[in-house]
Image (tube, rainbow, N blue to C red; front, side, top):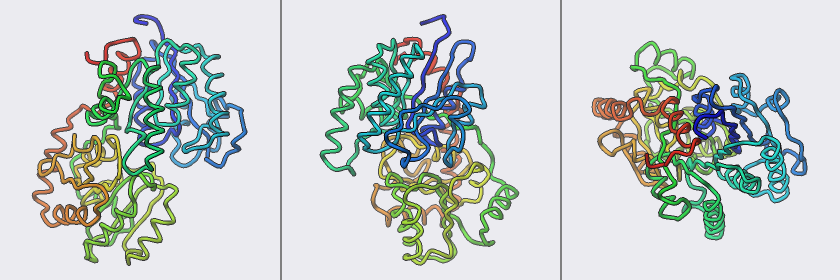
Length: 404
């Protein structure tokens, strides 16, 4: 597979910001003269008919997308696209059987040289279908591991057993961050000689914080003059611990600090209710999905991440690129870029009061916070670019050894 043009099927449950953004930017970084890529993603909503077995291609696949869906961008950029309505997150036996059948047909009809899967559900069904079809090269990216301490024991054991079964059928693994790779090897869901660390590709947004950008961003958010803003970006769901984030904001105990959450998700109503109960309704903004995140980040004084588990979140890299000091939970690969006292502050997950103390320190010590933000940008450099990820993908797809 060293010189020919390869056909690659990229499979992901939800092609949205985060893992989806990394997957898409990596695909677009590959030379189209050397790669023909089809992006396969899941249904429009989890409520779609679980018995539907149709697959949507091309313009039909990008009609009426959910908020944050990136499949239209892939199609506009010239990639082939397909949507499998039954490929949905979570446990859905009927939908999963239908999705497995659909993915098997796609792989059989496509004659792909490489199937590259991302995220838990697409990683499970896509790799099983590719192995059944005898795909020459199967690659999986761990953006984080599908098992974590916050799950019920039986669910963790089921995920672990599934991943070990799939590991024997996967030719190469990529892991977003060294900590994720190390844990995958420790848990025996990837052989050490088959896994390589990658860094999430983010859109370049390195900029010096300026008063004009800050003023425009605050105007867009409706933030009054003189207040300080603690912000975050992410899906409002269990992983991001929105209740801990709100509790940390409330624990600051000062009326001149506002909170801004950019994102949407199934926990939206609970997040708003908790903010109201904690007396924050007047100084908390939940913006929903936004396409102008880079323009909003300059409004923040501190970026705060409360996640229970992660890989290496793109939002942290983007916040650092925007010149923001970061307070985050010490989960998975986050400590690879947020070094306590040097490039930001870390706290254990599930400790909102400790997160509040870290945020308060950054707010009350702006000179020290600025020094950490500068060191964080220097540490990141230009390693988190689509071009760098594209080089790794090219090497991996063509059979290169992960350790080279």
